[in-house]
Image (cartoon, rainbow, N blue to C red; front, top):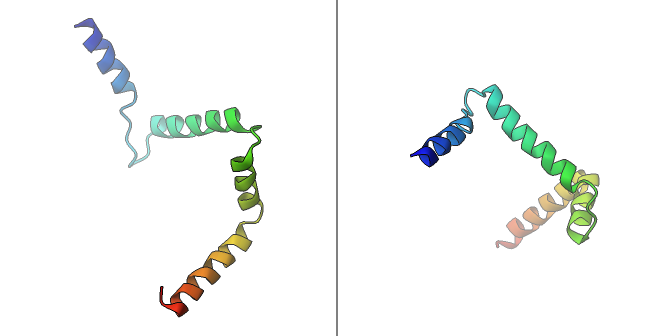
Length: 77
């Protein structure tokens, strides 16, 4: 019985509404994003280097994927 009460209290804390955005929803989503960023900001490996390249030159990759889509449309794939 006591376990059930604690579970409902914990779950009611996370009962937030997205539309209209409540303050608790914004705090949970932005807070978790900031904690994730803080934890993985200085991580260096192949995956993060790939993300770093995509983050530094996004317009180039945007044009590149448009070119690839256009070529596939011409070929008929």
